[in-house]
Amino acid sequence: MHQYRLSRLFIAVGLSVATTATLASPQAFMSSRSFAMGGTGVAVAHPSSATSTNPAMMAADHHSWSDEFGLALPSINVRVADEEETVDQVDDIQETIDDLETAINTLNTTDAQQLAGQLREQFEGFDKDTMRANIGLGLALAVPGKTLSVGLFSNGNLTATVRGEYDQSDDAKLQAIENGILIPGATDDLQSRGRVLASAVIEAGVSFAHALELNNGETLQLGISPKYVELRTFQYTETVSSFEDDEFDGDQYQTSKSGFNLDIGAAYSFGDEKQWNAGIAVKNLIPMELDSAASRPLLGEQVRTFKLNPTATVGIAHKSEYHVVTAEIDLTKKEAFGFEDDTQWLALGAEFDAWRYAQLRAGVRHNLASNDNNEGIEEKTQFTAGLGLNLMGVRFDLGALFSSADVGAALELGTSF
Image (cartoon, rainbow, N blue to C red; front, side, top):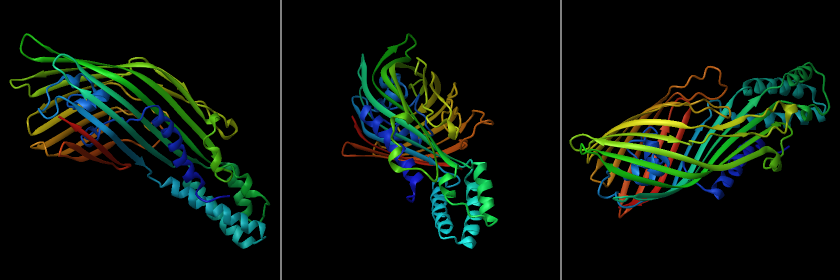
């Protein structure tokens, strides 16, 4: 049995699903600027990020240095939550299993008893522990115009979870070894397992926006993004003792489905100097569902349904040449697929601009969804911060996220003029 099997499994699954997603159409689920401002953007998105946040914002009033062209290439963000260091636990367990196997094969009763007790404690600590990772990758191009704004975007977002389960049949077997009964081949029959559940959404589309001047002098922007969407799921369950590295990418563990979908958005500028902006975005107007594979029913695998339902978010922002302050709320809840929480965010974000050349950003968001019955890592209140630099026409954005469970980072390169 090789070391670090499940660690490699987690990385491999991420690469397997994410690489497929990347080849289809890579993307990030939010821009680095949005990431650093608590995930906000419905009422403040710049043209290039508006394609995946609120297409109407392409036609909104922007700074003179960003109202003709916008490009994000690439945009990357990652979040990881591993409260109990799940993967490290697996590595330790695998080492103990190897040592126990050696002790049994050499008839070393004393070591076998000690190692069986140690393995029981490790399995008990591993039970129900969960790791979650979110990876986003994308690109976007936007050309705002007086009459019609046009954008192109391609994006993909992967969520992967790993969870440990202690099988009670192992407990009885290890207790027997602790009592001095050496069972040949006992380590080959251990049923405690790791579960991997992953889902990916891959999109590619075009965005259009138009600004309407109202009779009262204020401005209404409307936007639409027809897009191609591919859903993917991955479910893999294997005992810790019998996992093999070359099995993770089998077609029997994956499912996929594709189709066309639609995002729409609106934004309304008002105030004496149009310093206020309100926005609403409705994403994925056409509901889509995809059932996961369940190739290992004897290990407790069940079919799970990944749902891509319509979601609506509203926001309001106050802006000037030197600042943006915004608040937004999800009107709908996003249902979890793997070992994770449902989410419905209330978010605040701010940006302070130093004459275009540098921007300081901060944000906070709180999950309003009830998750009393969920079995994943909690997503509660998250804090964000970030920095933007514009040097010689190149835009460089960094973002960071942290909470009691999550840490994350975002990076984006681009340009605008």
